[in-house]
Image 1 (cartoon, helix red, strand yellow):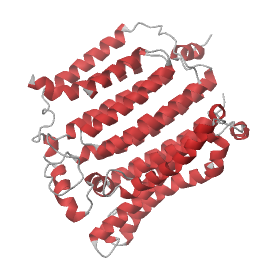
Image 2 (cartoon, helix red, strand yellow):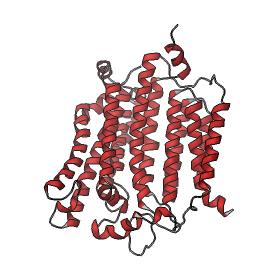
Image 3 (tube, each protein chain N blue to C red):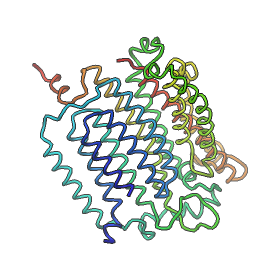
Image 4 (cartoon, rainbow over the protein chains, first blue to last red):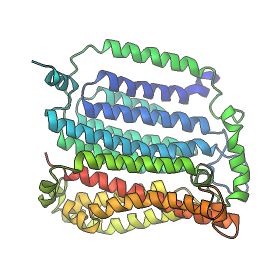
Length: 118
Length: 319
């Protein structure tokens, strides 16, 4: 039981990661794929932040009378990763819009069938 | 318990075919994860996730949906093989976690190396209460410079993909995308006019108070951009472009990166290392304060300008 509770956060993170991974490989719609990619990203964020938590610790803003803080390093890494993530997602969505203009569809199967020589 | 909500939302996202609902659920998903970050003591991260995930990326995805299709066609391949791959990978990862230190364990290896040093020495070396800001801007300033450059590059990429052609049709489309439907709603216009100054003020507070409380350049930039996005949604693209023209935004997005790198170079000229702020003023701690203030300003400028620019490009695109 202690094992399950101690690893619950990691397992949920892995579940979310795999759900995102499944969307990316199993779905043909490009917008849906990008949503899957975002879910994968958030799963990685949760994994990192869970590792940084210290039981009984406080947020890493120094204050008098507080002795135990959570680890600030994962927070820094993930803080920047979120903003970089939205920038790359925007780039992906821009590519989707251009693909839609060029092919008239965002379904992967239709794009492949248009690319094949007659 | 929040984590279980997150899992349920994810299942719904995977199952649904209506992409509009999927995007809305994704916004909820982001907000839930922000709540989880608060419970895990990562207040700065929660701040960013709430502004970015539930705000900007949802708006960008909705803009993409208006330009493409709203429903997803059913898959033609079997879903068995992907499901098998995912289960095997997930099983391997779960097996890997069995050796991991338990959640919240203060003896875990991650808490033994640099983290205690940041927590113990940063008051004397940097003198700021918010350790996250100290690490972000000073100890790992080089990383942050790289990340700001990535954001700038992504903005330039979107500009190249969506900005080049059809710009003329976009600029003459008076109401713009999204503006026309809510353009004449009096309540929305008045509420937005009251709300936007406070959002901008809050962004500035987050920018300059980031040294002491949760906040900083990344969060402030995103909130600032959110205020502009709100303005664009209510008053139309043409009105927003009159306030902040795309040309100005392009210059600002580059200027932020240059300010960051310039502060780094100033450290070299003052006799220190690249991004060493201690030499910028007579006292090392005062130098750190000055350096962090300037580079956070650079970060905020670039993030805000790139986000607004990306939104303009998405919104200005006509079908």
